[in-house]
Image: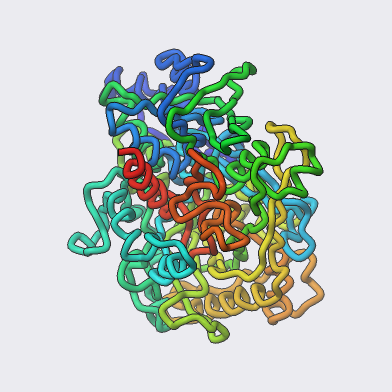
Length: 632
């Protein structure tokens, strides 16, 4: 047989060309067995059909469960799996989306998943002060609609947060949520394979969720890490004693493949034991069933294949639908702001400030730096058939396909303007071995809703020349801008209205400007200068009149190249009943309600010094313990 030739896959059919084509050639690869081929074919495009054929879990109307969990994201999968460990409890898990396939499991394809049915596809209302480079100035707000939720479509960064985050939650009237009290739940969920941290007391090696180093690394990230150290940022384990410094990224992958909440918590239950956990996909909950007199939740109503079903709960309904859908369902069920519910004709059951606060981490997509290296930047068209075969069939965890959307390292920095303690970072730099050019404008640009002119003016030439480059995304941890979410009507299948109000607080722009300056300073260190790192001097359309790289230019760029990373919190904010902004208690019970909890990142009271995926697993683990304690 002739040697396998490198296939230059065009970005549009990347999934088809780079994943399916090698599978179609497998009959020529004599060393591969039929069973392995079948397993891979099952993952490629027919997963949902196979799922429904092999596990025909058709809902039974009026069925009764001990617990009904709404939403199969990181928290929902975790709490459902843990509750089902009691064989005497019958648990239903309802998910509006389907199941993962090989595209979800392939980390390099993270950007493409935002263009699939696995993303709810939410957009903000048009923003006045941010997202000015987006079509209609609408920020894209990706959320997962699949078993695994956003953990199945995100960039797999595992970052728990700062000790001061959780101690602040507890000090605000949420007993049980201090760092020392939540750390055991982070550890319970984790199975860490991190070089040099094998004996660390901050990591566990026996939990369900795999956390590992990304084994594919470019010369660019090595230079960035070294340059960061040269700039005074020490190497650190950002999930350990101190966040401040620089680190290669820790990822929720297992042997180089995405390890989502579904893969970690649900799939083992389904595959290896007869389960009292009943899972229903393509089942969108439309309202909670509530006894208005006793204010008790007793079930849910949902749609499955265009038919309406009702499930009833003996013990509790657990709402884990995420930062947008959990508040939406509460409001559709009569729990929320009285004025909003009255305006759309929903009878009020319990007046609460649902959706009245919305925080998010906003970041700036850049700066981008070009280098003198070759073959280092992640370009979709550089993926070869050999790499695809090695990843898919040999399970090689060190190919380009295992890079988590190009993210390779994180740096945690303080700024001079911050009033916060010195061990509490203000800014994160996310080092990506690429940019919007990496996929020739077919994934990141579309997923983030960037205008064509942004790609054409700034990035197209990089893609055409295949010039090596990297980007440092600058993310602010503690924004002062506060948004909100509300219902436009009573339609449960419609979107809520989402107004993040990014950069309403001018100070938020200044923090990101500080981060851009810190990123440029790192680029000027010897390690990055040795590979010729220099700013990509292509001005942002709309900012051309300002001197390039001046403070005012960057302020303009920040308001244009605004980019969010799935970190919305506080729409069902946790706090004591005396807190007028609180929706749930420290036990995650909805204030004034019985047998109803919210268990997801919507309960996080203020923006954490973290990406929220790790916290979602922790919240699910802790909630499961609280629920079990109440019903034991």
